[in-house]
Amino acid sequence: MTDIARITEVIEPEAKALGFDLVRVRYFKGGEIGDEEHTLQVMAERPETGQLVIEDCAALSNRISDRFDELEEAGEVLLEDAYRLEVSSPGIDRPLTRAKDFADWIGQEARIELSELLGERKRFRGDLTGFDAETQTISIEDDGAVFEVPFALVANAKLILTDKLIAASRPLDTSGADEILEEQED
Image (cartoon, rainbow, N blue to C red; front, side, top):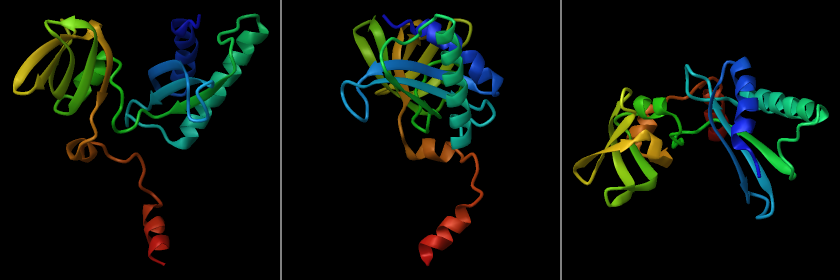
């Protein structure tokens, strides 16, 4: 069985060495090429922007690959099956995986799925209205009611792509955008 905690433990220092925060590490079967393919998905971000550019992704991918190779040479095999390494920015409609994500995105629409029922519900969709760091509780307004959701019960959560979210997300670098527009006009 794949030890995702150990894999994360190996990847996190590589991300930190480049100045990135690790957002999520997932290992799953099925991907773009086919259902039999395994994918190790790593999402990271620059803390100051919440994004990565392609060069950042390449640098992190190389560090992870090199570290995995070093461990394998030392006798520790983290992944038994062949896999594809996918390193990316979390994107605009990003997953919410850390407590700070919920605090950072208050006011935005999100979808939250819990690992167990809270009252009679497991799924919530609405505006994030607050995050209490002391109690680790997320406040989400769904259909006019505000629910207090324990962070510890969150199984899956992500932002919903809305005009408001697009407006709140600024591009990391727009240099060269004018040249692209000029090329399209020609």
